[in-house]
Image (cartoon, rainbow, N blue to C red; front, side, top):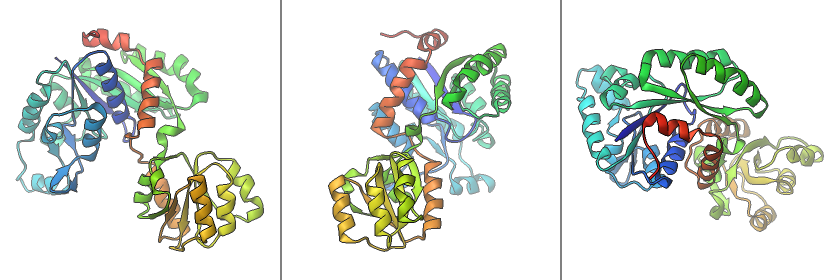
Length: 358
């Protein structure tokens, strides 16, 4: 049985996407897989259960049936941290070990998903290095590309020095398309020369940073007053509709698949937005639109989100939501699977892990 630990150098680098993509590929190749998040930092009450939403989503994506408390055994949320500081922490290492025994039964490979940084959990003996030693895991690092390539390379080489043979390589993610040749010709050889194998260089695709209408409404604490059936529609861009109506159409045509944020008292801007590639309208100030706007949006299948905030606050909240988009949308999963099939060196990975497709 093989254990593969997916970790990252920064938050929102693509760990969940890589776990889902690799997991589905392993399943297609006939491998029985398990999944686990050894250490998490947040949980949410759903009914009578406290759950890790990301772990729950991964269970659905990969059709897993293991107990949820084994899939995310340790949560270092604020109450747990306070208990640790007061000397009343639990034996978290044993909890992870016991949970892993449950998740790994009957599996060919177990995917572990790490936290937002390699040191997370270090005070309770559950850093990336600790977990990889505890569970005899190979470590694959996913790094979100930054134009400051030396910094990215430094972080990855430093990870290699800390983890040694446990670290089998890296995936470079979200590389701007105009930088792909540069990265493949210069950055990849640099990393390979420092014993950091690169399994894939993945381009930045705007759709992976998109957010669904439903998630956007939640982030804005808004009410969907039109076409609630379209909450899964993906929004890739934000546009503020604060200009004159004369320049609105030209402005809106520059961005595709967008959410237009404007005042609820601007029917002229709202109509202009509906004439372009607008995926949803976000109306600020808690001002309901003219019935004509609602009717037109209904015809076009464009949801309207009504929010109480002013426009500036709404924009700030929306931008923050885009910076924390999650990987659980069917369209994103399918696109990422296809990208991995085209760009990921599965032959090399399988050789390193010592596994083969059934």
